[in-house]
Image 1 (spheres, rainbow, N blue to C red):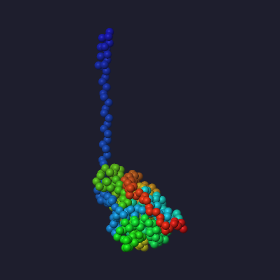
Image 2 (image 1 turned 90 degrees about the vertical axis):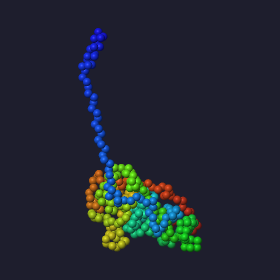
Image 3 (image 1 turned 180 degrees about the vertical axis):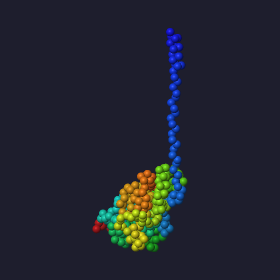
Length: 358
């Protein structure tokens, strides 16, 4: 019986239908081809230098040390409560993130404070270009009644001379002066020291690595954004190492913009300059909102659409905007934390004026 049962099992197994193995899973789709950047688009850009040098004001470590102190010193303002860093906060990508900065007696200016980072690469300073360089720009806010409100250059120099530590610092920064020669503490030298410090405020980013040959430094979406940025025509104005700042352009070039600010026309009185402003740098643009000369735009996507519409006369898709924003974010660099560390300032002397809130 056992044998018969065994034979029956063998027969049943032999008769059982063979089951075909499951089919192999389908092969994964091939990865999309890597995005290639248009070589002509790259011709519009340059890597950031270590500093934006000015032959008329050679950078020295002594000037930089002095300029750093002056940049942070509120005693250059009438009420000792406003410094260069108040509106151009170095730990916040060189801006205060306000539509309009506040100065003496909480007064507001009429324009947005642009970032001081990479500003040495600009054709001129201020939105209307009224200062030729960083050294000239450093002189303006200190005497502006809305900003730092010092009455005149003579008063500023008197304050600096009343602070004993600055005598030594100016002497080291300008060694050809002093010791029986011209007094090194002058308004011009103050501006030169601040300018020397600012000329090293540069923020290289992954984009600079890409420009230098590291093709993996940007993602495919960022590369797509770069191609879109170029194909839309943005590189006409935003080019060079600062990716902007090298020209003046009329706001509302294609589609008019309703603003009261006449821009550079107020300086030159040339009708061709009406509503023209210095093109801003796009370095760190993701960190320096709000945008435009009046701080009227708060979102980067809003700004991309606005510029495409009013400057280029083009309607952009959501995909294009997202790609361009991805590229713009790749322009955010690292802050030079050691370089911008707040310095210890020399203490007041017995003749240092008191704060004047009036």
